[in-house]
Amino acid sequence: MSAPLEIQEDTILVILGASGDLAKKKLERRCLLPTDFKIVGFAPDEMTHDSFLSIIKSPIKLESPRFAEQLEQFCQRCSYVSGHEGGENSFHALRRRLEQLGTGKKEQNRLFYMALPPSIFTGMQDGLRKHCYSERGASRIIIEKPFGHDLNSSRELQRALDPNWREDEIFRVDHYLGKEVVNNLLVLRFGNEIFGAIWNARHIDNIEISMTEAGGAEGRGSYFNSVGAIRDVMQNHLTQILALLTMERPRSFSADDLCAEKARVLDWMLPIEYVDTIIGQYGKSSDGKKPAFKDEEDVPKDSKCATFCAAVGHIENERWAGVPFLLKAGKALNESLAEIKIHFKPSTNAAIFSTHPLTNNTMTIRVQPSEGVFLRINTFVPSLDSQQTSAMDLDLSYRGREIPEAYEVLLLDALKGDKARSVRRDELDTSWKIWTPLLQFLDDEEDEVRPREYAYGSNGPEGLEEFIASYQNRSWKGSKRGNDAGGSFREDGSRTASLSLMTGAKDVPA
Image (cartoon, rainbow, N blue to C red):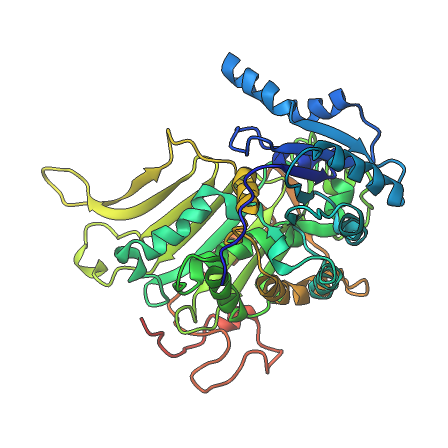
């Protein structure tokens, strides 16, 4: 396979939806771009050039006069095109600006970043291909999640792309794949023999992957009501982290090899069932100062939107059969945190430490904030007259290190043509297969299932702690799919998730 084409110079980044919230997070300001790199914002709003620059500058803290100078230099690369006319006239205006910026250039390379809701995605990408595709250089389209609403709509969007864009021109980005700690999972697993040897069901009791936010919908209630926590976070961010944690070693770190292994392990994962979840929606804070989700503007009073979900998944391959994966995401909780917790099984030597019970080893991988890796181990407490044990953390934090922004990493990948951190279409298909049955069940208008209300600022719905505890420190071993007699839990609808935890099952090879 030939090496991807790397774009060096004469490149224009077009951000579609440049007046929106997401665009503020994507605009690159660290001067790592090629010399002649230009940025064009494109949105339906009628906006002046200065107003567009204010969008770029508003979230930035000026740390020094030198940084302020760099920001001004960056802003000189930026311009804005209004698409308020709509239809083909808007694309004609954009094309004129692109041709103007490319005057006298040998090539006209173009990156189109779709910071757009899925509802208008198809028409926009079609217009870009028809009117703005470069005939004198490379064109690439960068697509932000969510890619579709469920499995069928995802496939429909892909079919819309097929006539216009080659697969090597499509970058389906999940910004969590650009985060430093997430990228480090591959080195942590495959570059350290001490972890590789214990990364399986024989040694690991359960794995938690969570992303919680202290803030609520905050003005984006209408959008969030249409997607919910599962589509917004779990089908993409958390599932991608899960794939990196559980995949087999790839033949190389090339895009094809990485994506193939991620798709393969996700294909082993059973679809999430409602009995293996807790679904919640935030209400008012206990002091009444923070609004309920239903009090957000443009949110229906009878909304069933899940602003919180805790779900348990199972991967039925030889390495992971019997290990529950606890996935949790939600808004308006008691803290903003994204982390992975790997809970190891109790030590087989615990009986000889009679003075104090041993704590199970836990590896915590903090994605944000305060990035780092922390390993909890047991050790003796320094003392002259006793031998008590205590759990202590080995701290491998990222303090003092400059960590690149996730969008910065993904944008530079697109320039290089490197798709190792992009989501391939078979990965996308497999991840939607995991979550679509649950989403269809929750979306069913005839079903009376409603989310459990929890207070804004709390740690989640009632029963959450018991739900999580039921999947941890288990005495059983084995697979959710079947038991010693070879039966399948899918064949008997009367069995519940709690019953499946009590089954005896075959041992899992190391």
